[in-house]
Image (cartoon, rainbow, N blue to C red; front, side, top):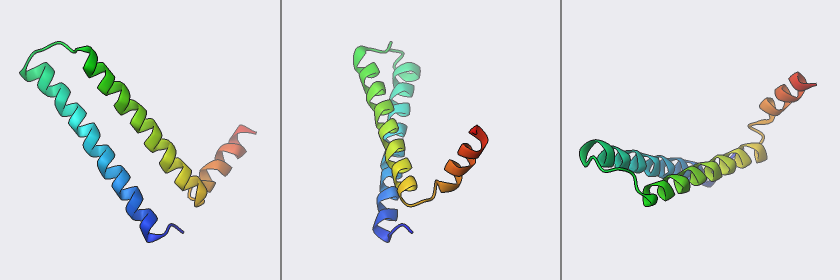
Length: 83
């Protein structure tokens, strides 16, 4: 069972990750559609950092799910089908 503080932590991680991703999408929309400026190196660096952040957040949430047993069914199902 996840503690109330753990639930709050997961909600905060998801909310701020979504806000970050939304700001990246809005930045690209503004650059491409409104300003009609080609992408520069800083845009690619921001994209790379956002993709890296999404990978870390996915790993953290997967780690929390694995630690608390919520992914046990998935693990058993995959193991059964792979063998």
